[in-house]
Image (cartoon, rainbow, N blue to C red; front, top):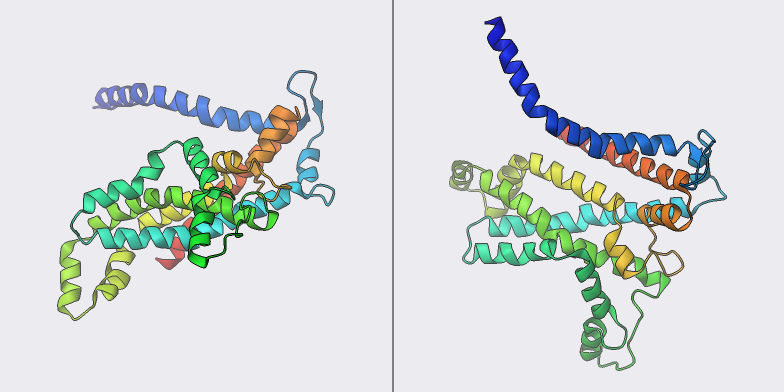
Length: 294
């Protein structure tokens, strides 16, 4: 019996070891090295100067509010993702989950933006936002009858942040919708039918039966929305590159500039570590909130 258990343990270890080594090598080891580099003043080539936590102090001092402003932008995106993007996704999931005609077609249509390259989406929205021939300004001119209407959506510091958020929210509505759609379909039909037999309306069935059964999926969607907002980079980089006047800058853009343009590997690694810590912290907080609700 002992030999059989030992043989099983060896087999399990042999099967898990390649995945474990890959996980450690691709994820854990880079995180550890980023933490180590964040304690140095280093340009990536020359000698390292050990400065302990000076990089972290610089991020949060009054002399350098750039990171804090960028972090506020990411938190605003997280707020809009949770309170605008996810409700839209939930509404679509509940609607399509009823088994309407053309259900598969609409699932494919709403999920299509997730499959398109972010760079392509950025270029499409750049054309749409163009103040001269963009479809958005043209439509507003047609509706209002004002031929002089032409705000520079991505060039005005007051409008750029909101304009840059719209494509991000639009791109991932279908992603969260598909997660929630799977949750809606997993709710037993008997529960819905029992509630309707008791006189519940469709809205009450969704509120008191379907949504409570989807709390696990909702928690995952909220975590993905918040952590994805904190890590946002590609679409904002394509649309505005953090401009104008750093109005749309997010921490990831600062990190790239510090690393590859400024040659400050220590500071770039510090920002990377802060993003990792923030993502884990928000994931734990969201998990705790959903546990308390349960």
